Length: 402
Image (cartoon, rainbow, N blue to C red):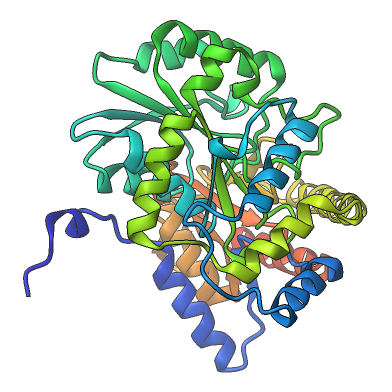
């Protein structure tokens, strides 16, 4: 059977091979430490689980409107007002099957064939693939370590062409953990307002912010920029609900209607029971205590992983201020050899590290960053210490030849 060009154009994930290999080693009884986790290691809070059980007991298991229940959409509006100072109505909200689905919907709704979409690198590896599926052209802009891997206004302005349709902005960032200040977002918003490009603002890691200032959404800058912005968020990282698959978009009503239309023919409504659970997550004050506990735990582990990495020569990183990742440069290790075998790339490094030391890290070529690896610290303190020590042993065994 012939495969469509758009499917063939998807870039294979370099991490799938590593994930499969790590799984096989674990099944063989090897003590594999994985820094690959992309989800919180907390259970979903009990009050949210109870809300799902209650929905089941009440028989709330039927179809809902394709864009989500009115009560959940209102709870999302209340959250956006409370946390971000933004005024939306339920007509501006579409609830989707996770934030990834929300991103897919948003890009399908606004990107035409041949449109350029600016993606600051490093980026979450799915962004370019979603743009390509819509017929768009991903335009990566390499950010600099000295700027904390954050896009500057001058870099954005230089990347905009007559074909530019949108900017994808991820704050806090995966894979770098970078958090934009309010002033940095304002400088980008000024360019957005002047040029009229759209913004897809991925704010899924919003609550995992270790600075002393709240996350400032670009939609808060002005009514004009708000009308040009599609906010993407959800409950997966906020309430440790990754498997519940509830995300949302918040945007101009006309765009929201288009997104709802796309979703209605693709998936219909998100899981009904999960919608009631998500509504409970947003509405109850118990969530604040959970967020404080989770944020505090990740902050402590963030400091631990930085302390351990500081002990290893040849590695460097930019301090992460958000999410639960640390983005590590292995550029000084590439070109060295391990038992006579040359390390030519981050992918080589990750494969050899898994083979020799039973440690999984994510090579970042697919994230638009050669010479870097991503480590998640959404694992136990014990595994952080053990895993980083093994990485140190691996690097200590490498040699510079020639």
